Image 1 (tube, rainbow, N blue to C red):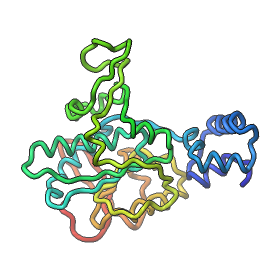
Image 2 (image 1 turned 45 degrees about the vertical axis):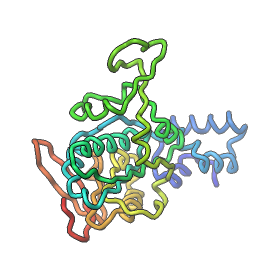
Image 3 (image 1 turned 90 degrees about the vertical axis):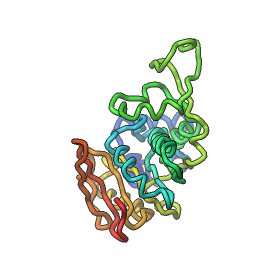
Image 4 (image 1 turned 135 degrees about the vertical axis):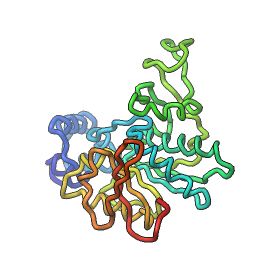
Length: 275
């Protein structure tokens, strides 16, 4: 392994890291291990330390509501079969919990609740630890997810501290604990999308606002790893700003116009789907 951290990052993670972040990683290796050499570089990349230094971890509840509206439309077709969903590059876990909150809200209004399972992963082990703890600041509830805001209320418990004790409602200085009941249907784990995923089949994969960070020459590989675990007729949802980046023979672009919101998603060819 060479000493070129930029090149190693491209090969290992498939991303072009900012030069300032590369220098921070170099300083981290030097401070933690004394020397920047092949052995220590290999250690920080294999342990997840490099990912913690280099990756972007933007996350909040019900980001891009149009996708959650779409999921809500799809749920009736899974009442008999159940649904298996993947939340790829999940960062701190808000997306996975948002999906679970929506399905739980749906289940409260139907006679036969939908059985569901969510796999959620990220390359950064630090944010997966955050997801497993399920403790978030009020900043993870943004205005652009407000139409689904009510779905979070039953599952977020305010944690008291010296700044928020006795303060009603949500305030920016507080932290909130996700109800443990949501965790029973979610599995969080670390995974590098440059590698194949563990064997599984998903009805829907959320992979939003992450493809933009991968170098163009690696995007087909990333998509291939996701499409491999997508069921025939299954849906791949990308961020609304990155759908033009998805070019792969294994998926077909779909357009849907409802409620004055444009939605573009991808579907894996195969057996006829109910959506």
